[in-house]
Image (tube, rainbow, N blue to C red; front, side):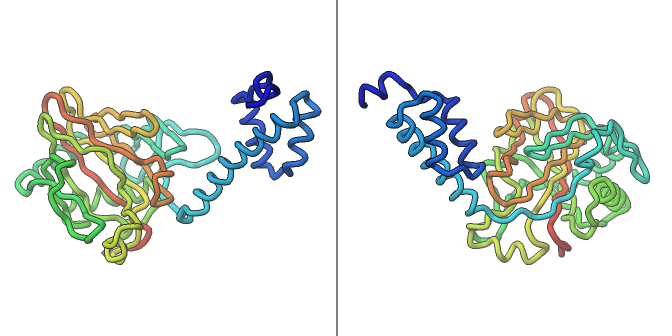
Length: 289
């Protein structure tokens, strides 16, 4: 390091300013001229510019490799303020929390307590060890990361499922036919689902065959069917968020790219006491068959 660089250190604020200029399309010569006019030595300015531009170009290269964004459902308007209540054809649902990045909306009272009880009763006799879809093969198999019991209802299999599916479609503005069947899961003490993404990894060999059934997953609705005593929250590690599993409530989240940039890494925290029941609805780009 030269004597000049010893006397003038590149600060985080300077790096941020250079990055802002690069994103705005400023020419390197103009950036250096502005820095020297502000009292920075030319040698320091050139070194700082080269260092920041290298990171900027790496960032641009990563962005260019992202899959293009797709349309996704949403229960809330993006403009005009946040409503506290959503009036659906058969029910009013409260808005408890909303985030934009990632798009996460916590909903109060999406299901009645009677609907929760009925869904658990219908599902209980059909529970088996939960499986996950393996995108390298397209098959489903037991995974150590998922220690729950579960089952799937066919879409519209009974009056209760059809009613819930129609309510979700009205809530998020997405066709009923673009939804998978409802999955019900039971987590006993110690059971969990480690953080994962719900979209199908485009890099895996089995993904193309999975996508033939309706395209990529674009959103998830997790509905809580009971109140665990302790634990069992839905966690979003990338944004340090945990949603409490409250009976009748739900959490919605969407992902417009099948990529970690969506920040939708999420998991089911271990149940510490009691047990947790949830019903999950995945939404696809197109008609799910």
